[in-house]
Image (cartoon, rainbow, N blue to C red; front, side):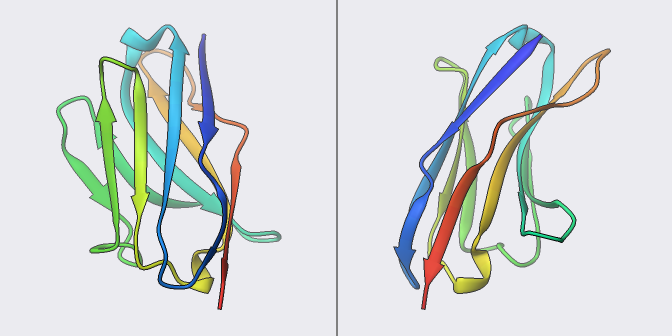
Length: 116
């Protein structure tokens, strides 16, 4: 079992920054990719950014150049640094982990609101 706990969401003005954190616990050695997704009410959950155990990253086109995903293996934590935030970045952000031999794990979500 893998448990994911997000933190760091909140309200920020357009152009501002937030950093989201996702702390993993449990069978963390079986995690091979971690990422962030976001979802607005009535819409599908969409990929924001991924980071593999190798350190390789992947970003949605809408956040490239503004968001940075990173991981601290000593703390079993993945971060999403979000800069130059726009009102359209307003969503609930979910941490995700892909686990060898199992289905994905999800965090409970953290709300990000960007005011114009």
